[in-house]
Length: 321
Image 1 (spheres, rainbow, N blue to C red):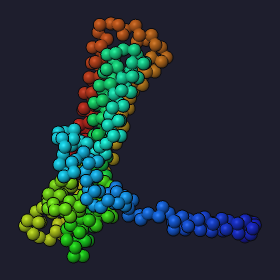
Image 2: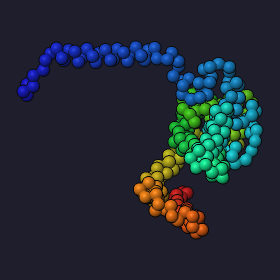
Image 3: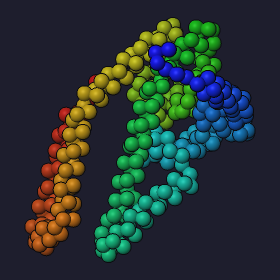
Image 4: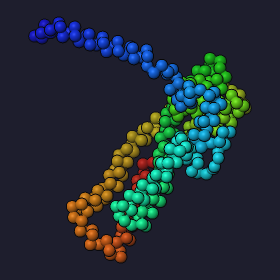
């Protein structure tokens, strides 16, 4: 047919191979890990799978976030707020990383350049600026992920309320169904309510741990309804629509500003690329002027102009709405 000649043997072998793959997949799914899938949805459920009870899990989650066993901050300030909202686990690995960064930077600068002042500057930069930039990046990424998950969580709460469940039960259902970061945060609310905290206080604690602006709308809606009454399901349903529209707007703004961000990255990388290329091709091109008294001022002025340009471009492509 159509000039094609099939060997029946190859057709049978192909179907046999496909059947073997399907059987292997079925066996894999039957014996896969022998753990309940729900225990791997988020970290709170994973810790609960290990045993110890909800109270131990709640205390461990708090300590991983730099909080005391009672949920209060052991230390305060902007740095603690950044650590708390970034979601990093406070413990020996984090301390070792923070100690290794300045040490490695200082040793590297000392070995390559042999200048003690430069080594100290590199160690100071790696011990302060790099951790702060890392925390800012992690906090922004976590808050964006939380904002993406929040409308789905509100939908689960709305469906639970319409089914007749109270708000704490609806929150615990979100904790069982949603992945991190939202799943563990709502799970901590459910555990705190179980051990005596009021709903509004537990939610405001979560708001402090997350710091996401859309979450404040959800917490305020629940707090107002608990004191004045009203149809919470309808309120949250409308809120979910508003949050989804805000999320779409953020994505649209991100797409419209992508060209400006790429241009900013190219403009920042080009002087560094040209400077490095010239030094590799002709080391004496800049070598003759490094000793001039005006060299540091010219270099500092160039860096200052670049920072000013970055600030202007940042203001052009970032705005609140």
